[in-house]
Image (tube, rainbow, N blue to C red):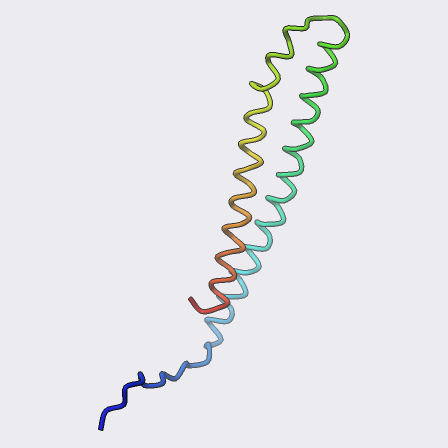
Length: 102
């Protein structure tokens, strides 16, 4: 008589090679995440510096029109910040999926 529930599959414990590979992957992912967090903060500080310089020129009376350049200079910094955030999120998601066995 056949059962309507699927048969239980046994899961083999990871081999030492698989454990070494997983540890290497997580170490590399953690290192890249920390590096990207650092770069994201540097991008934010550079953006604030550029904004301050442009605003300083504008408020010192050296050209009010220079404020129109602010979005052009800040946009690349914003895109880099968003990209770093996406990659950090993707690395975290990949690590979570790998730990869950998916």
